[in-house]
Image (tube, rainbow, N blue to C red; front, side):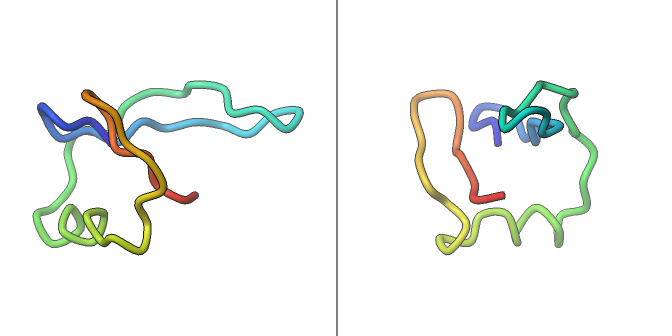
Amino acid sequence: MRKDEFGLLLGIEENNRIKPAGIMEFVTTAARKQFYSHDLIVDENKKFIYLDP
């Protein structure tokens, strides 16, 4: 998930690796709030928050 401007990075699992598939930017406010749950966050850096798939 991007930090500066909301966006979910999408990926497709192939051969035990995740291949980039795009960015989902348009999500309802209620759905966005669910992604900020601390139960889902596994790591973060300056630009992204990484969620448990």
